[in-house]
Length: 74
Image 1 (cartoon, rainbow, N blue to C red):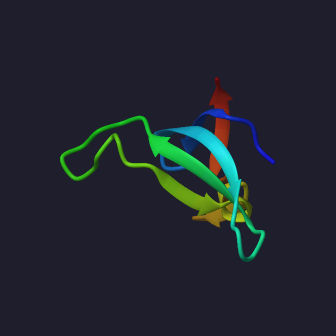
Image 2: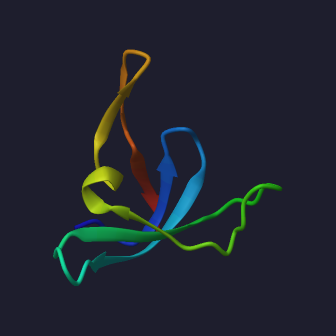
């Protein structure tokens, strides 16, 4: 499980993790989060979910390794 708080995506934007939630059928864990930025093509009030395994994974881009989301603070 991950803790609630502010996270930074490896591409730079910030997100607020609100909760972790479990799928009622598969029992898979998901992260419930919202963006902390606003652009003409985004809605700051949108709430998103992503599988916990994907949210917490380490990825490789351009020969470098990154955490997809890195905890910043509460």
